[in-house]
Image 1: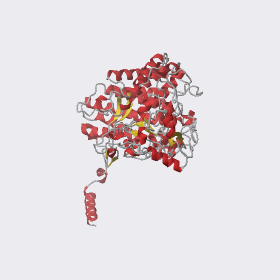
Image 2 (image 1 turned 45 degrees about the vertical axis):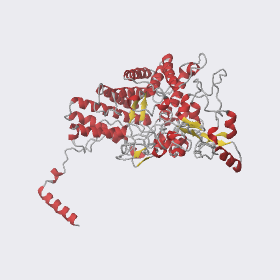
Image 3 (image 1 turned 90 degrees about the horizontal axis):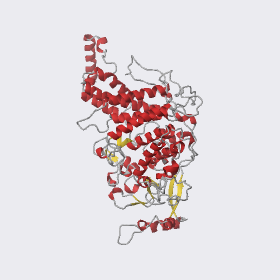
Image 4 (image 1 turned 60 degrees about the vertical axis):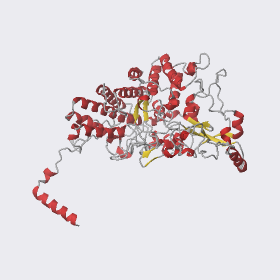
Length: 623
């Protein structure tokens, strides 16, 4: 009561002494003090927050509104278990107009994905106001280059989802508010490319002598992103063949080829090359990782700089709680070729390696062993040399018949796995773009413009790094028949991307970009490993036999088995499949290549129109 009385007295005093119109007249109606744009440290803080909201993170690290829609694919078991992922894939129900909220569903959020246009607003403010400040021109240029690239990244993510979006490029204030409609896909792509070209120009020769360059965008990154953007513009999602309404433009592939060659050359000149070991790509950080291009830096020891991905990939037996987002589907497993590069469906009886569905892990592309922990395989978690991973029915890790090794740090002890109280976990950096993607993007452009030989050269280098063998005479790492012409090479590159980038959040976008989204067949399943016994007593006896201690040893009987001997394996185990309940086959409407905005966003302007194909849809992004 005393405080209230004091406030009332002060208010009375000010009302008598101050002109209210002057008191409430704010010079900066945008809510940002103009002085920050003349203070390098203040701009740096603003820029760091913009990075934090713009650079992608580990898949499933964030849980923005209905995020599973954008992570759904045929590669992970999660997609058959989550409500929104199932709807996105047509496994159970189908998405409706108000379901896709990628643009954000909060006026102003502090978490990744809360409001994409608020993230864009940060870049718009900086791009407009930094030139008005008093910083040295060289400092301004370096800041502006980064903001232009970050704005392009945000708009690119929106365009991949919606096709055409409101194109806001100026700061918004109550007196100057953009309430316009959606720009066409062409207009959006033109602006994204313009921003990236400005980024390349402004960041040419930029360095950070204080060591703060890790995780920043550079001229190299801007070039790679420009190349990727133009690849999308040339691809079927935005450049469909036999559309009837929109003419196919083959010239876009030539433009994409030039940009991808430039990006590839810039990367090579910067010392980029494939890492020697596929298994170590995410485990090697800093300058030693010659493949990582665009990264998001993490730490297990700096507060609020970690993530819990280690927990999400590890089994229970070693301190984890494996998330089904990192459990492979049978579709993903079957996409891995044999060790000579030929698909498992090959009917060539003279091929060096033949596929055995019972011993499904044998003689496969070495990336299979590097990525998956199957029943009885060696996975030296927690620094335990020679440790074997057992996933059979009734074992500790029986939740799934196979696990993912990608993103795991084997040397990390089980007690250090969890990220809790803003510390701990592996601290592994996220690699959003790596050189292998630059190579495959370039190879795709080469193939689409008729240079099959050079496209094969790039894919061959990736397969050689993986450890794939050349195979019998004329096999050429599986490229001889798999890449016999443009059409077959196109399919081979698509499959190569699925294998190379497993769990790296590329599959959803690839299926949409290539217009293979609505052509998916089958459903979501994963492997289940049963015991070769029937009835409760027999199952218990088999489990007890496998887990009996070996005399004078810390090993169990199961650890002595040679699982690569088929008669031994089948004596104890049976392969099966695990299917989520109440799902059907993939059934995705063809118009879902471009989603529509949810209701709250649509209500913000009468000029916003729903996407064609959706209820009330009028707007065609490709017009």
